Image (cartoon, rainbow, N blue to C red; front, side, top):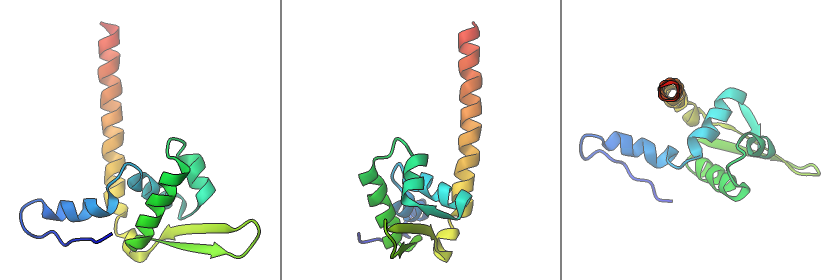
Length: 120
């Protein structure tokens, strides 16, 4: 997929970032790489139960094509494939950690709001 350099107006750097990590699963995949360093396809699939096998393979392929992750295939039977962040991919760690932090904040706020609603 052809990638663009967005430098035309305010907000364009956000577009540049989103073209790499957009999609429901890419940020979640990156989160698992940050937590586990090296991941196997089956491990990712078990950890991401709502993501289909086909979608996971597609998202991994795009992340690899963008240079964010690297794939190593071992010549064993059954074949084993490892994925890990590249040096370039590791520059996304602060972005994903910020998303995790904000997500925790949102979840706590949502739970508190829901508890207030049900107790009234």
